Image 1: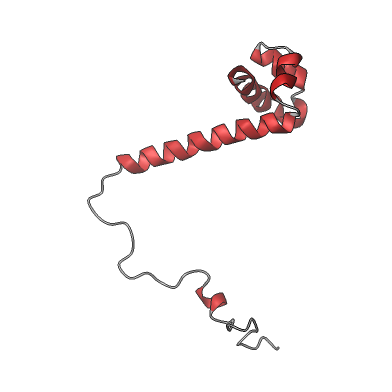
Image 2: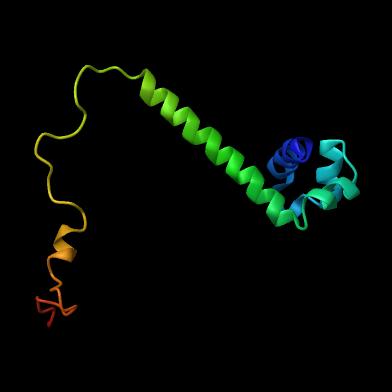
Length: 104
């Protein structure tokens, strides 16, 4: 399965999702189409595994960079401003109706 994911990364990066046939993915992976179908029932499911791997790598990279940062200070603001939703949230009452008028 690892070889298929690596082969799919290459195939998708070269040809895109639609341009990378299952045959080409298998060629890049050095595997047969039988090996593909014994692990996946669609190209989309393989793509999702490739996407998850890429997302996990990105998240790991970001976490490593954050861990390397040592600024010696708290990056959070001392008095947070209004949240982006606060103005919207304050216009609704607990009953679900708007407490402001938008007539115009």
